Length: 224
Image 1 (spheres, rainbow, N blue to C red):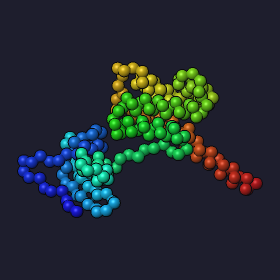
Image 2: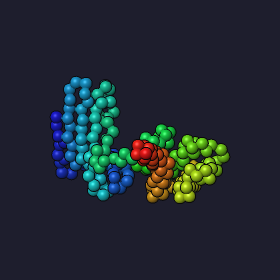
Image 3: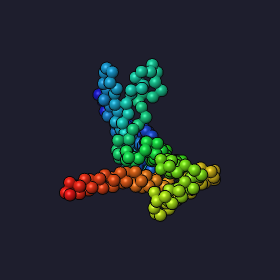
Image 4: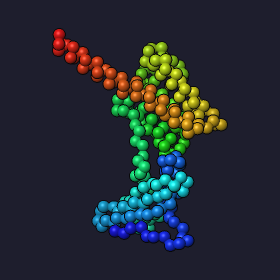
């Protein structure tokens, strides 16, 4: 085992690429200290580094391993890509009541927003979430606007939910079909929130409400 060495005066400090929670960007974090744990045998070794964001000065803790490099004769890099441990990465996912294709589309939209900072791509994936919702509810004819209208007219989308989905659809359409359009971080975040709210309402909350009514009915039957 060994710890990170001190840096001589005038010597440039090591940097590692990491995502800064506060700057919402990938930065070349300055390594202020590191600790390495070497393990003999089949298990990989680990390295932890405390970084400082060069922009906002916030601390970032990352971990690396040598699992891939140890099997190479001359690896390009001895350590893996840094994985952020602190601040904790958001693990925002849709509930399991939501069909898997829709959950996967939302996860990709979230990754575009939080990891890649690809806000226009996030908007397009949020639109895809709506496509999946329409398909799972049997609205398959016409374009997306017509399918959402079908769900609204059938009562599966109330007025407010329809307005939310239509807002996501419009921005998603612009992002997908107009090369001059770029979606801002704020708009992408709102679209992500709206897509999540609609999906959770139509699947997770609906399932919870049905289970609640079932329990109530069972209790009422037991008393009669």
